[in-house]
Image (cartoon, rainbow, N blue to C red; front, side):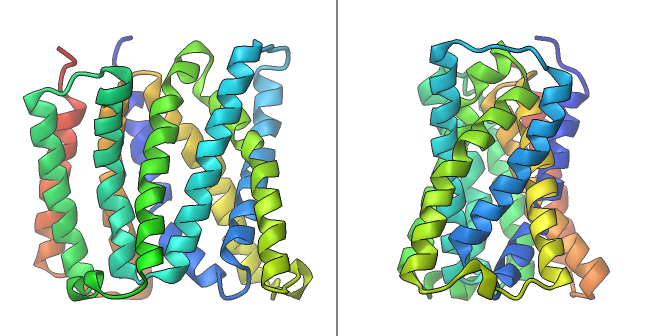
Length: 298
């Protein structure tokens, strides 16, 4: 399939929408438990996507095999959300950066192993450059000494979340190509809602909390809207949109943009200081993204 600007712009936009997700979700846990917040996020995202897809593809029908495929992707979504939010809740910002650094690497390797995607020297070099650039950006923003301290369960959850999102990306490629990014993102998200609903109910029961006890203020509602509409409905569609044109390993490199955008908005909106490492790291990361996104598959 021919390359178009969408191949780069769609996953780039998705990663940009995820830029502030760590801070928003971490802040939201003060009012809503992590798995429950994840359920609300995905339920709202699913409702948003379903409203759009019903207008865009009103008469689409799927085979039993494809329905099982959407259900399997829903499982990847559930695993991603639970491990990501639990891991975020239990770790510090430095450890949370593991999610950003490892997800593209897992996706690239899983794409090679599962989909037999080619791993060219140019793509490997570009991924390495993007990794180094991202680490420079993160080193300038967080205390790297804190990566080795903290909750081991939380770190393990973040590692699982990185692999789970790689699985969602790689195993979704065939359905994206057979149907569309919108349909695949929609029905995989819808499939995850009951799975997360059960886990959220268990969390509330085990912690003896009720959703009605949450402080449902306007800021909390805004956080849920951002997580559901922007970082789920819009971002997941845009992420899969890239798979309509390029392989999973190429889409994966745009995940490195996430911490750069987060640091940028932290500086603009919160007045956080950024040093020369941010600029240098951003340039190296951008070079790596360019190298991977312009590499051929031969």
